[in-house]
Image (tube, rainbow, N blue to C red):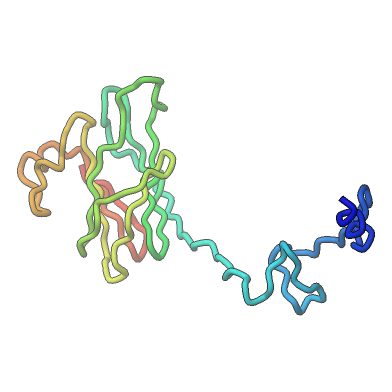
Length: 184
């Protein structure tokens, strides 16, 4: 016990003594050494700073096109298409707005003049796909009623006659100009 008491007297801290902290500089915790502040316990040296993340640039093309009736009494509205270097975001809405428990959802096939993945990520009420390659000129979106399984009728990338007969509409989107048109 005596050893601890002597050690406590020699150390520069005392029980109940408040140490005054320095102000946190702008940009903390990514403070560089050259700013006049030496790296501390929770500060990072300039060499340890992560690269600045730049938000992905998106170009939005508003459409507001009525695709047609996808379920009894519900029309699908293509609100817009947004493009980034990696992704294509299809923005849509239903008119009238979906009621609680309504069996209404987006039933759509997506392709381009250069093959593209059908894999998607739900982005709220919108759908995000991989962007077609930069060499691609057009993207196509085929829309169906909610009770139709289009994937069964799209073997090896070629739609069969049942697919074409059940398609409500096709939206053709020009990837270079942003122009779009609906074919019924």
